[in-house]
Length: 355
Ligand code: WQD
Image 1 (spheres, rainbow, N blue to C red):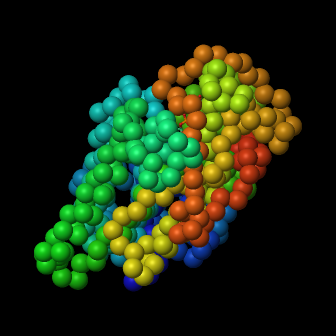
Image 2: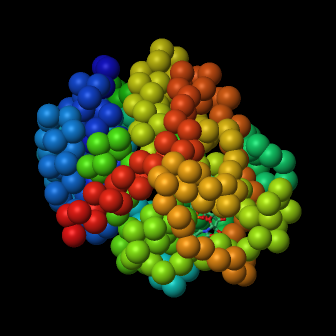
């Protein structure tokens, strides 16, 4: 059966909220499951302002097995799940690893168990380019070997990919032995490896809401330009890159949102079953200094920054080969770096107005 109703876990978060907007605009019904640990319930009102439709929000902690299974029982008519809900701060995961393993892995296991109770077997999972570590060859394809994780957060993504692959394999093995349950559909899973999502919706009504001091480059830039932080520290200019600063594949969050809908629709393609992996990036890498230049050019703001020492655990450079996603999902990121930095700034300005 084609997907009509979708459960989006973490749907009030940064990437989740933009994906919910895209789903509603394409006519899907959306149920959000979120514990609001790193987002606000009012995001659903902003989503309604953009789309004219208010998604249903269930406040639930998916790492609580009883609560999670109850949630899936109530919403057993959903045909697909997009599972964003997870803790994602690299530094915090180093300080509090057990919380990260419990939160990110328990919730995945219970979501799968909840789906297993119903007929829902279609899942889009949020993975990360961190599974590649510092690759030997660039750009990275989906076949680039994964490397040991550099922090507990990244490890939860790597382990989650393994859990999904093992589950699909077990399902296939049982079917091959004729032990599949009657009427039970095979699992269809895509794990999406995000590169560096930045930017915000063009309406400036939804965007990234970091807790406390931002760890990531883009919110640090916008908060510095807004006067909330005195100065951006650029972590190292002695890398083996053209300007000495590290290179990443920054992708507009709206391009990423569109990719999730394409991925979910791909699950309905005749012949697809099992699990597959996709890189979601633009295919172009930019250095930290290039991001700063883009921000200054696009917004007309002058940014106060200084070069300091390297940040521990940072890799030098990575960007994606996106051929597989372009070809199979029929999707391509089309928003450029200036559009990313400008939209992030407009969102920051909007936040300031409300504060
Ligand atoms: C980008 C560049 C920093 C802040 C993130 C996530 C990770 C994964 C991939 C999802 C680096 C530099 C940053 C600052 C700086 N995402 N920087 N000053 O490290 O690529 O990782 O994306 O799974 O979990 O954390 O992104 O935005 O932190 O850094 O100079 O104040 O900006 O050194 O080169 P990163 P980032």
